[in-house]
Image (cartoon, rainbow, N blue to C red; front, top):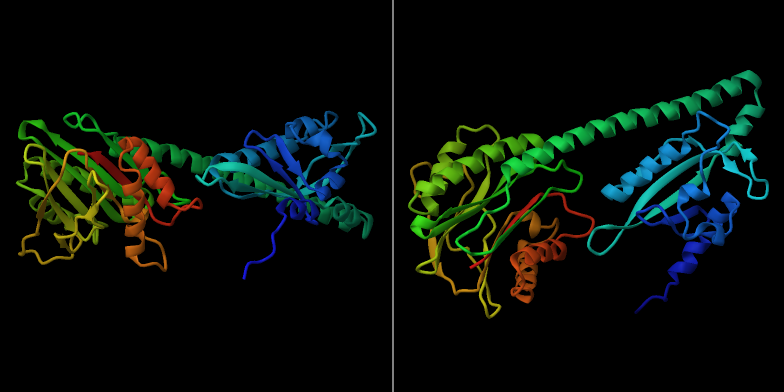
Length: 409
């Protein structure tokens, strides 16, 4: 039985809390009745205008910081898509009917991203709760002690905001380091004998921009072969990235001299035994023989690559799977398998962040991948890679990292 049709605009206007919607450029898109009443402005005075043109700092207060603090919070939300709760703010407001006359007021703001279908920030929801009367009441009763408590409350709130700002700056520096590491460890693919390829790398929601997932493409034109691989180190952040860098380099080197992917993964497994943190790493390697149009592949506990043929048939390369690195007996050889491919087919290698979801069977994620891949198989690899990410990863993000390689065969 279907429920009632909900008029969300009417609900927004009737909300008892004061709420405004801002574009990512911080222009008012709308404001509910409670917000307009609290701010003493009409909808016509607000909608379509830049928020700080409507509510500037008090020019008579040289220590005013309301605009600076609110701008920093709103900009963070618009840029990162992460909710931000601000400390108690003093933000004076000019009387609308008495130009040049300002009223001392105190606010408790919360800024929340409203995401579009592709995960980008479409709007910023700006909710404010006024606490001016509370501050005044505390100052009006109990004499000096109440005023001291009021001052302490405000001071502690400002101190908390300053601490948060320092933490954010430190995080920004870590993120910059992470970006440089990513660029060094996971470069864009070069030309692969005229074949088009695209790569993507997406860290888990809330993580630094480096992780334990990697991809690698090794082109050997003299042998008529290209080796493609992806891998996944357990964990997130800089420690996992350090292990990832070592394993990626080792596999890249092994792929240049190995007879096939099984031998390359065998060498990687031996090397991984000497690396702390490499335990239970998964990886898959595919050797592409362009002349004979065959794919030879081997997997160390990794989700199977997907091969989409020109007619839209999707096959998962799952006939040569062994345990992860460090979890297999030392004296047994890894297996590999071979399958033909047609010109124009698409090969996709990925890590589990693309397909795995909590409380869901992995087959459901593989089915989603096959469906999106088949429907968009004729797209350019770069466009297809973007489509796979946006089509398979929820807008709110996931708790695991994702690496992706798309190659037109």
